[in-house]
Length: 209
Length: 172
Length: 196
Image 1 (cartoon, each protein chain N blue to C red):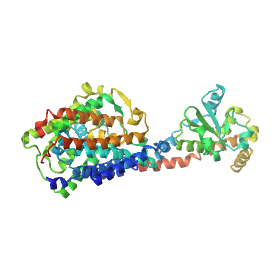
Image 2: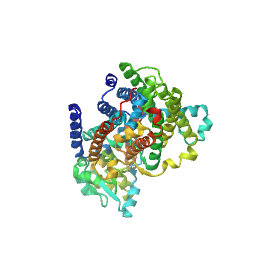
Image 3: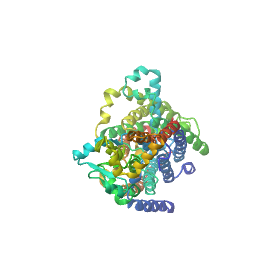
Image 4: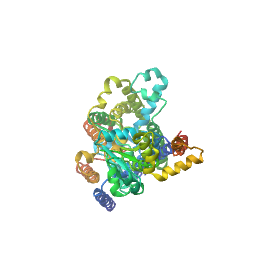
């Protein structure tokens, strides 16, 4: 064996010995690509309606994990039965991620509307977590549809005064007077976050085709 | 002899470089290298073009009829075109470009061609059954440490050694 | 994060072309464009194939582990074959006989064509015939058989129950041992070089 071969053998063995004691990192892989994420965003399969959630709670679904992503103040005022609180701005803390990083439970995020819960869902999905969902319409819809479908104004007041005041204000601004108009405005506001998504869809599809 | 063998690269160095090529294939495209895939694609596309109704009813040729063509196949076609170009470049540098039928002095050119075709036929069948050839299933499979890659290499070289005795007159 | 290019994109095809060029260049440099050198591995007069082949395989296996270690490569996003034990072994055995008869494998035959070997062209013609025959006889010979003994996308480390790094190290040591062994065999039995 000449010197050059010996050098090669030693080099390969040293490199091999080093890598032998590392572990293969598969975690990176679970972060999904922008394309996949986009696909999941435009599929609406992440949504459960408040009725679905109510059904899960009543039937005491053992695989249910409700996560309230509002701030603790709102959470302590009123929340869903069995829900625990992970405020959106603390979602990425390690101890909180431990709740999300599993397959056994179906995790349903909710906030006052859909937006904050959607953000939480987006982050969790981006991290590759499975089985994460959003309660569509959030607590507002919950109260409207489940707690008191008719006389919602009183309970609204209790759950989120600010939101209620804002909507009342907005309703006045748009010329509405009654509570029904408030509700209509709330409906009108809902598609708002979706609009940029639609624009993005076109862009990406154009790029691929 | 001495200066002739010098024209070939040191096998270990060539191996390391080939390893880097495999890594590049995985790194840039997420694909393994291949040799037979392009031929397979060419055959399937040809059959689908010439006899579309037959191909439609054959489970093997059927997928080539679809307008949605699997991109991996096209990747392999481009890769094999590259192999041809790379071979010409290297051969030109080493002065090895020469039209010839290479065979052991003990056999005729005709015999060599016949056995080359027979060997090709077997490779064609075997590579479809084994899901890739020496480079595709074997080399790339071993690079990702897949069981399939090791099995196919063991089978190819194992049978090669077993059969070598019967065909020794072809080579030595 | 690897893979860099998306499947089916033009960039990916361009990458394929360049990777192919590098592949062809190295194969030709190593002497894989000549069938007599390739066949030498089975008669002990030239072990180049074995050396190049195993060096390439463990270099790539180790390199991919390193890329993974540095967080730029991810095994789950790249090609990984499903293992069908018996079809793979039978297919490999058929290819083994084809190798000794034809003196090429598909990749090297492309290289042979590039340097003007007419026998390599005949070999590729043979592959096309073989693929055609396989396709014609697919439904009654192969279709069911090729799907038997499926053990999934298994890696050696999973089967042996060791970490991937250790598996690669064992593979390297095995490869080096084989290199030493074949040189010793050639010397011991005093196998003559063959002129080609």
